[in-house]
Length: 193
Image 1 (cartoon, one colour):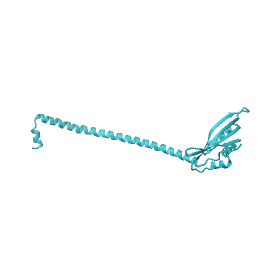
Image 2 (cartoon, rainbow, N blue to C red):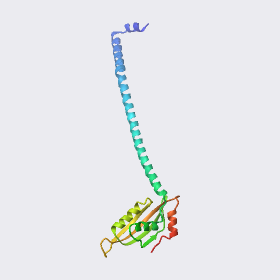
Image 3 (cartoon, rainbow, N blue to C red):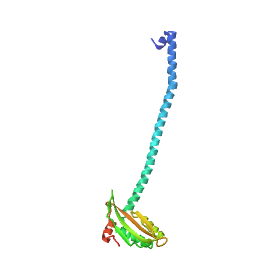
């Protein structure tokens, strides 16, 4: 018995149910398939957008890493040049601006993580503000790993624009680097009174 004969032998109710089933199956294919494809494409779009977002974050992180790498290289270049003997260095900055350093004292070095800090205390008496600021600029802009770590300025009653200054200047030596500055401080004694 063939399929055609089976269909003709069915009752009208069975034929109607089979027709409804065929229409539902056809509707499912013609409507369900595009809906399935559309939802699959929407999910693929969402995945692609997530991938694009991850790639954007990677690009931003790469820019940040390059910036940090440049900063680290600049810092390494600064520490590649050993810090000078502080007493001599400070005296040179002072004399370049017409000042004298009557008293300087080296303090014991302080070990840090990866660095050694050498500190020199300096006292200046009756200095003008402009030459003193120019001396500070010369120290800060020297290109050496040197900074003014402590500063105290007191006015003098003896005249206008005269100040007594006490300050500490710190030099940083990276561990493993040649310590010519520290060696120079030891050989010169670093103390002047």
